[in-house]
Image 1: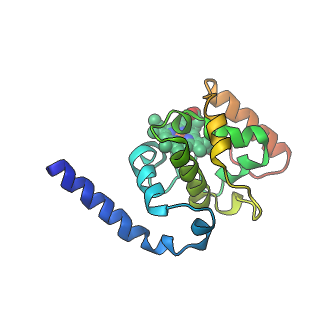
Image 2: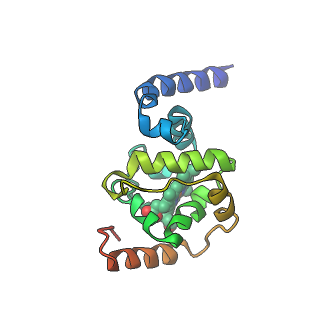
Length: 154
Ligand code: HEC
């Protein structure tokens, strides 16, 4: 019972906190339920990525950064193939929603005005191939992006 009421309290708090977000047309346009996406982020991601998405202790900062990866096909796949995403307990629809929410929430100046949100089909395909050499793979992407003059942090 205690567990149930705690969960209820958490989801009520999320619903209230996200009420302002629901009005956000960016979420509506992408068919994102921001309260649900945020809840999933809180449950599955923020333990490492922290609530603000700034990371730390080996976890990269996503603020004004994460959107740069979308400029490379391998970078688009990377955001899905990274273990936290690919191996999450979320189904393909919810992971797609969470990734698009993450980009809107933290992408900031790194997100191009004409960015293409993830489709469920794209996420379904990419997560079949989770990454193993993640740090090396990320470093190569960052190098390519920097060479293309995107101001992404290492
Ligand atoms: C156990 C800690 C941990 C958890 C939990 C976690 N991540 Fe991560 N995440 C990382 C680390 C560390 C990286 C950097 C790449 C690497 O070394 O794996 C990363 C990288 C990422 C990236 C790419 C950002 C970049 O700049 O490289 C995305 C997107 C991401 N995670 C999404 C998620 C999502 C979505 C969830 C929840 C469903 C999640 N992660 C859960 C640790 C975590």
